Image (tube, rainbow, N blue to C red; front, side, top):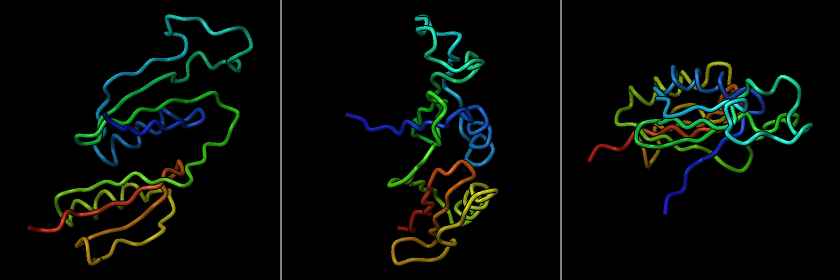
Length: 139
């Protein structure tokens, strides 16, 4: 079994991927717009102009696969009750990633040393996705 996050960006999926590409080195695996779907959507199902929005996207952040979509739009994207935990090898890398994800976001816990990590912090990025950034403790 594999559990993978699937994040709905309410019309901002392409923008979110470009942000994650710069912030955490995300690498695109695949992208399909609604207009590229082999199955046509029933009339009235999609808002006008939605053909250009992302039906499905997958990208890698390190070894993890994240799936994403623009969703069905018209609803605010709310990322409550969950966080994406990102572990990196060094304190410097944790600081760099934390700063990048904080750009336009909301720092919930500044990067700090904890009993379980030399550098740990929490932030909601500018899309509202919650992140926990942690440097792996030295062995």
